[in-house]
Image 1 (tube, rainbow, N blue to C red):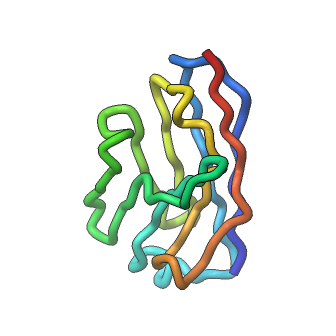
Image 2: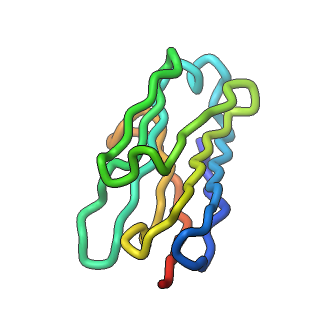
Length: 116
């Protein structure tokens, strides 16, 4: 199983970005029934859970991104996306895609840097 994130960039505060995670080597059935998460890790800080989408499509978000970020998935294409609006300097971090929880599948991360 391989997860490949893309879409990270160096952007000004207030701008938007969409991160994508392409999952390969996983059947549609396994992909669709597992929770899909986006985590992030800022320099000197612990990795934190940013957004989750579960099998039925329900989503949850960290308080710090609620109302600005939207997680979505395409079960047929086995992709997960994170739409990030109104970016803030404090959103600067490496963003990681995760399938199935912390002990399961991870991508290599994509850097998002936000400047004021």
